[in-house]
Image: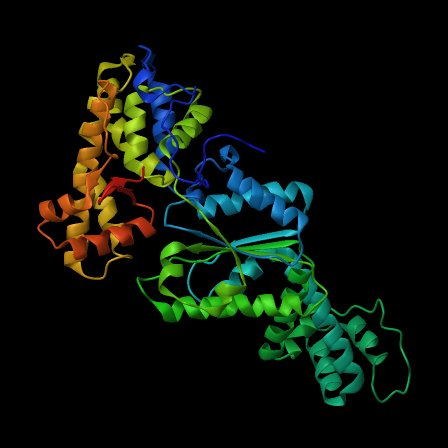
Length: 464
């Protein structure tokens, strides 16, 4: 499978020891002095500025993690599977779906359907667009059979067909229709009897829609895998979410009552999953897209760009850490760090040294990082004051984490776990320990922080 940089997710059992891609401890990593050309910086900026898979963010370079490889194996080997892939916004659900589609198409050509539902209620239309010409051909066959049947058994319909043929001045068509006259008493073999599409105008629009739905269901039942990327919803709108899940379940139920062996994979925004209980979730084999650790982001970047240029390794490591495991955010911060450098190089028209940590910190500011978090927390905390205190908590932990990393680089050792004791956090935030405990528990469930019991205290640290 391809193994270059793309949207990533990985399944982990807690963050491993941070190392460079070559396996060296962080404190042992040394940046190699080098220069970087203007074209590389511009190509990288173009790549980093395309934040969605729909914008073309390198699907051919998708980085396959063990988790997604397992997903591919499951869809290749099993039939009638129902899988739900759950991830936060920007985690790479759309890119994962497209990469899986491309991979499966190699083994099951013309048997994979992958759709992004653009808005609530748009599932059927998205599926129709996905099967395209095949649906037109299937519907045309059903309409032809419908006209043939009606002409032979319905005298009124037959007369309408004759009148339409006369208006179109199609004498040849009239002659063919006379062979089907229901009052002639003549039996005609209609196996290969085809009538022009113009006669489809005699069928009501409601009947055409019904036949189109039947054609779509038939085509879907013949596929091997159907993948559905659900839309992004307004915050907490359970009604829209439930309607779309009902629509997907309707497709699933129909396929399961047929002889079809099709599997369905649904890509679900985690915020949707958290705020809309639906019994259809209970039928799914759920797969969580877990945010990447720093070393995985660095590995993907190195494979894509054959190294860390135009950044020093410690600068790119900082970008990866601030991205908090979300590849879309990783690319955004890379673009922010490149913008002033590209402007400088364009003015000087010369090659420049690698972008260092100090330059990155000027571009990827605390304010920028907190701004991204502010939007994320909208889906977790309903009350403004909860979100404000949570942002303060995250900022405290981030600043403390940087100081601890500096101590590690200087060779200092700690007896207690990394992070800040929970009671100390409560004191510094001017909150009760009970309130802080609730905030920390919620953040831990969403993967932002981790808690470590030690003696009579609980230490809280960032989870990236």
